[in-house]
Image (tube, rainbow, N blue to C red; front, side, top):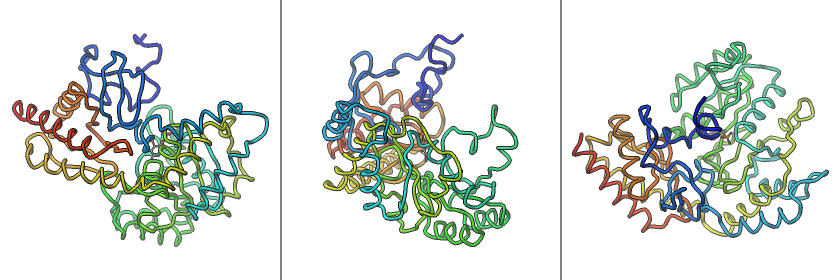
Length: 393
Ligand SMILES: Cc1ncc(COP(=O)(O)O)c(C=O)c1O
């Protein structure tokens, strides 16, 4: 039996010490923060009381900063009002209305608790609408059966899923045409390591329409970050359905599937429902988050801070070429490519020892709480740590 009551150390895979800091090689994990007690703004305190500046930002689920006061106040009001009850809360329809006003291609929407559930709902709705079964995907869409391989996934389910190559126009066109009238849906993450080309996005739009398949943008990471309406808003390409989550409720558990009303009408022909999808704390948190985004230029700030960080990372790449082989991502979500797994491990650990949580893989996220001085100090720490890694390279 493992030492932990929660097998695998934690229920969120990307927060495992070996995911964040590299495998410990069979030894006990030491010298790195493994569990936290508190977070505020862009700072986190571990179980030993040490303080860190953070770029993991709850795996992109927080864009306003941890414990944002307006979001917390809204959540506290929802707690005081009873959290959940026998009827759907008024707040559900109000939030849907506010989101549809701001993101017009969300004509209708359903709320769920996790990104994985919401993408699965989008795929189900596409299958209902088309009467077809095949799915093409690109990127990560959560842990549920329809997009996963490996043990525990029925071969028949796996056989219905294929992957399309990001930004590869010819490869994508070929796969969509091959699937043809068996294709229910194409689900893509609009940013995978690099920015999408306009040509690829337009091809996705044109080819799915051509074969009668549904186009879904999985905007779990990109909505409320690149723009409120995510990549669809930034790049001006309209999906049929979109899936939003993570930063939408600034760390409270909420996701949604939404889009064309004729596709959303499919909910009457299948079963998509969850007991706590309508609990009001996360709905209230999302309503408050949307209000902050409406009144403050959150995406502008993320872009400015992210650009400052990204430019700095490029400079570090040129200075420490033996350790860093490239820079991935875009301003709002970025990371360094390392020469080896060992180096990425040493750098992540070196940063943590200096009070910085900086992911060694995709992605690091800035928030409203990251200021220019925070980013500049981060780049200085990275420079120091990379310099030390360089000496051992
Ligand atoms: C693009 C994308 N889709 C879906 C998911 C799954 O979301 P969740 O972990 O909330 O189920 C993630 C999570 O990282 C994601 O990044």
